[in-house]
Amino acid sequence: MTWQPNRLEAERLEKTRELEALDIDTFPARVERTHTAAQAVAMYEALEPEDSEAAEAIEVTVAGRVRRVNIKGKISFIHVEDESGRVQLLLRVNDMDEDVYLLVRDKLIDTDDFVQASGTMMRTKAGEVSVLVHEFKLIAKSLSPLPVIKQAKQDDGTVVEYGEFTDVESRYRQRYADLAVNRQVREVFRKRSQMIAALRRFFDGEGMLEVETPILQPIYGGAAARPFVTHHNQLDQDLYLRISFELYLKRLLVGGYDAVYEIGRDFRNEGVSFKHNPEFTQLEFYKAYIDYTGVMDIVERMLRYVVQQVTGGTVVEWQDHRIDFGPPFQRIRLRDAIEHGSGIDYMAYRDAQSLEGAIRGIGDKVEPGQTWGKLVDHLLSKYVEPKLIQPAFVLDYPRDISPFAKRVTYDEFHVERFEMFMGGMEMGNAFTELNDPRDQEQRFLDMASLYASDDDEAAPLDEDYLRAMRYGMPPNGGFGMGVDRLAMLLTNQRSIRDVLLFPHLRTEIVKAQAEDAN
RNA sequence: GGCUCCGUAGCUCAAUUGGCAGAGCAGUUGACUCUUAAUCAAUCGGUUGUAGGUUCGAGUCCUACCGGAGUCACCA
Image 1 (cartoon, rainbow, N blue to C red):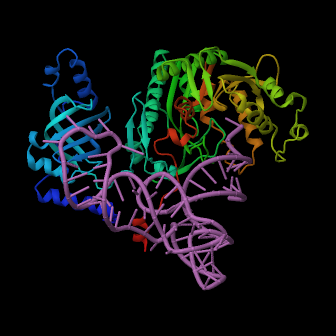
Image 2 (cartoon, rainbow, N blue to C red):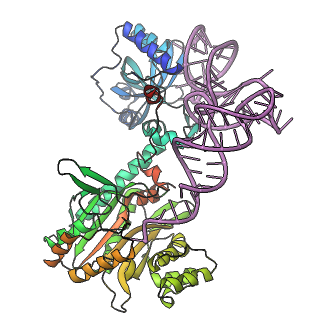
Image 3 (cartoon, rainbow, N blue to C red):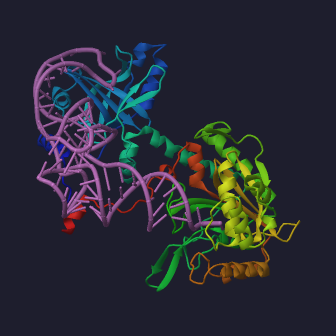
């Protein structure tokens, strides 16, 4: 074992040995729990007003982690927590096997240990519903103490914490400790889970089919991003972790499904930030016989449903804002949004050089040599995106930066695409999907010419996708959304890392490893 | 990758112009049969992220590295 116990851990190891010397199993396999902590308390409280004698006859066996031990000589209080909540144990030496009581009094039971207690329900003089314990046993020893947090319940029911476990790096690296100790962190991930369940319910209710498509792909595509590369040994073939699901899902419309969706992981080999993680959860759906206005209608209903399911209402508190999903979402054309935000009408500057000049003209420093499309995107993300707090659809993007969208009817220049914004973040992206294989091939070629040949952001031409499209693809609308970002919004978390259970960090050099290496 | 900030006991934090590395919590020992941030008394606890350098003297200043946060770039 490479573990070097610190002083506190050495003490716990020693206690474990003492317990074992008393022939006590410190990690038994069997537990006889009959009630969760919350159930035990609720049962007592339900019966107490009518028949307190019957309430005090309720027998329970509860189990959970010890959060606090308060020894007062021949009587002790232990707070035990399971996922449902906490319940207090009252141990009196008179009411139980003295040897067992002495284990508690002599501090062989530590905070953080898992224990099981059997007894009857009662209310203490101080008013707390508790288990009057007759039998008590250790069911798992904790060898390393969790970070110390003390909590007190105020009269109004709010829980105040004294002392904290706040070190961001430790919390991310040891999320198990973070979760074990920070109840509000557990709540964030419970909400995230509810949100994803609600998404599935919504799309299932829409009659869409949930599918699973390859994560390991021979050709990546559907977005512009650097991929992670891996290798299949037996086939001696390079494979890419997918950067989007788009091209596989649309193949399925060729196959005859009217509507499909997928919730899963995408991987992008790019910078990490408060809203970017190398692997992140994406939702995409594609539905035949609708265009992007139909997509907008679905997305609006979807968000209203999910927000309702997770928060019980239509309003989400986000930083200093209240985001209301009740009213119809704002819909504004990209061109108008950018002109409104920056004063620049990009249609007046049709090439990169003149647009760059216009941007410099408003006192903005941009790196020279960017493509026209990237400049438009710069204007969007700097002058429009941060202001879009309430849900908004920004419509009709230049064709150059949208290789999978159909042309609008009113000019040759824009395509039927929208991005969804809320909380000042881009949240989703949608098109009236291109389904003419000849047009699609030309778009692929156009895109390729925008990138240097050695730029792996330029996705390689996907011949198989074009082959699928040649068989005939129904007109359809599609949508993709960053699920993590929606989770940030619904749980009011500032960083994507706070809605990922195990966010990406540089590999930690654990002390034991470092010493092994020497 | 650039820039800025941060890293001190298990946790949360102090440490004056460079001058003996401290506190609360928890831990340990003792007291206590209704506590709940229990209380009271005593007590243990440090390679100040790592490696160098400057200095009589470094937690503090300098260099490099490791890790994290923020920001810019990148992410259509």
